[in-house]
Image (cartoon, rainbow, N blue to C red; front, side):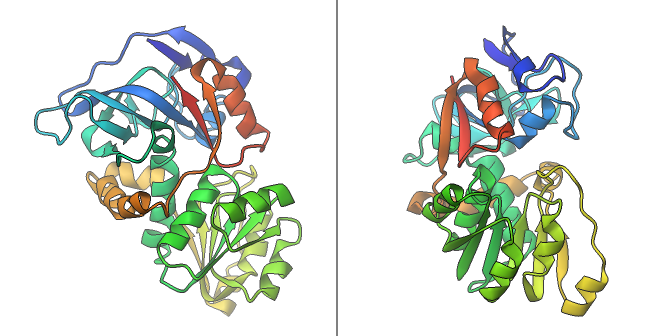
Length: 325
């Protein structure tokens, strides 16, 4: 089979397309013919050795796929030909191996795709939408009528968080973006309004502040985000796309009765069998209704995986970037 391999840690231009041995599913795994794979920030970091998971080189990246079941355990709910999305696995490590024509996944990390969802859309769902659900609903305990601020709101994760908040009853979602073009894209994805990252904090305070901040960016935005929160507000720490890990002076939390909440879905859900399936069941009705509808920023053939990751590296991507087989 054809597959993308990370052979050195010299960035997205150093990845290689190679013929690789197709994976063999174990007794508790499904084998999937991959039609589409999501390209995300973790794969970009992996090309430079900056991600916390560091398999020995060479290896096949790719944390989410959509395709058709080739084989499945008799005890599972899947049969050959079923349309699925999944988080694949390589050598016991979850969320690897997706940038290939074939992949294996644990049964409880494989999800039935609604008929109206294309493979390209399906490959956009597991990582971003389950992360957004975990953060907003499970960790922040978002309630109907609350307001949410989303950083990086034009990207794949940001658009997912915006749609998730609205689908589960947020009264308003304010997008933070770096440009007006991205702001317009965030509003088209479901945000009620947008503010530019430069000077976002006073702009949001003028709008009355928010109950929850969804922050996958970190860096200098963190402290300014605290200032946008209402009393009893929660700041969700999703990641550090800005590159630096911020610190907090806890007197800010005390004086305003606010909470900083870690939301590391990728280190939490895989260790809890069945947890992802519960999350998937919670979001599927909203996928079927169209409330959760992935924004696709670009599709690239597998041979152009370097170009797809460069799009992420240059912060140009609006919505989700997808590789097709």
